[in-house]
Image (cartoon, rainbow, N blue to C red; front, side):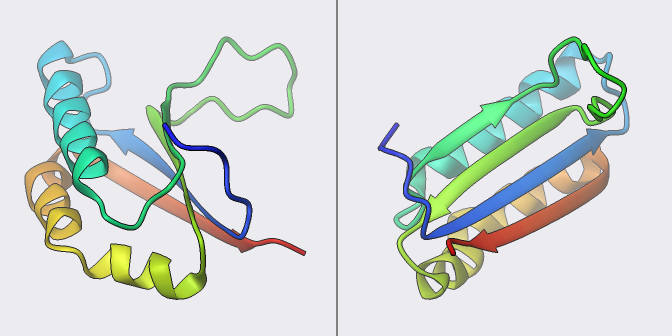
Length: 107
C-alpha cells in the first residue's frame, strides 16, 4: 500500500446481498483485490469491514468499504474508465445490493 494522498479521495461502501455467505465474500474480496492490484491510478488502496460499533452515530450496516486516493480528479476519472474497473463491476455487481460512493477533494 502506498502513502495516503489526500488530493482526491474515493470512498465506497458496499452492501452484499448475502453478507453471511463465505462464498460470496471470498468472490467479492478476490475480485476487488485483483482490481485494486491492477489499477494504474489508485494510490492508497484500503479495503475494510465495519468494526463493532461503540457509538450510536457509527453506521456499521455496510459489508465492505473501499478507500482509494488519487493524485487528481483526472486520475480518478481514468480509474473509473480502466478495463480492470469494468471487469470488477462485471464480476461483482451481482453480489451487492447497494453501493454508496463519496468522493472528496482536499481543502
